[in-house]
Length: 297
Image 1 (cartoon, one colour):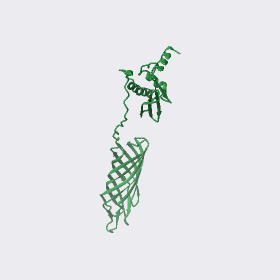
Image 2 (cartoon, helix red, strand yellow):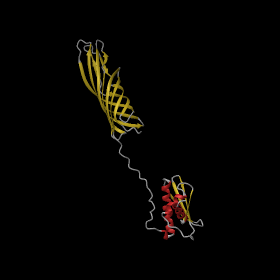
Image 3 (cartoon, rainbow, N blue to C red):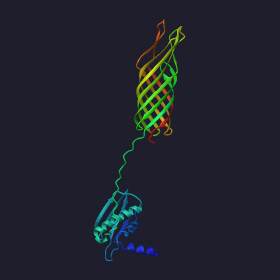
Image 4 (cartoon, rainbow, N blue to C red):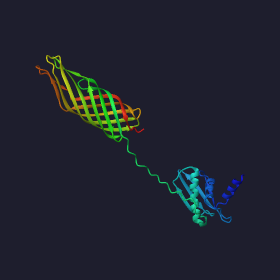
């Protein structure tokens, strides 16, 4: 045994407290920390016994005298490394011993660490989400027509309520008026509220609001072919499901519809035969989006 180790053993043997521990921190670790706090006891003094137990993130410390009478006990809701807990236990035991034996008080004794109170930080403001979505569409009225859509979605808090703007167009369809036909198509736009819900990389948008349709129609096969254009306000509703491959890129599918509140009719002269332009239009579109999203990953 080296001289330093021998001197350390003598110092521990002279401690006024014997430590009993069943694990982490060990009795040796606590006694070593106590040796830096408490002076050696006289040979005539009967050492006290300290019991240190660690259970489920709690540290129980008890101090009893030579006759096993309880002097003090304390339960600390504290966890950490064995070395840190040994320092903490030694500080508690040293404080008790100083109360029992005022001669143990040292001016430079390290104070008992104050209890740590965990204060959760206020949640940071959610990041804004937005995207630009370009897609191919299929509109359904009296017949189907291919088309395209462009949508802008902005959700200020990343999820919840936001705003959606849509522009859409479709290929021309035909209506038979007996001696001739009418070719017609609509250009559409809308401003809608958007409710966003995110689960992992999947984002669901429920949208609805007000729209406007611009109808363009022209005759074909008549002795005199005329053209007209007119508008009609509309109400809109739909749902979009997006799969965000990254926080900047997504594939999406949107199913919705528009109801044009103003009836529009085309007719031929001089037969007077007329056909109604459908007021209800279904719109299915699929495409890609780029932007920024809070996906809850």
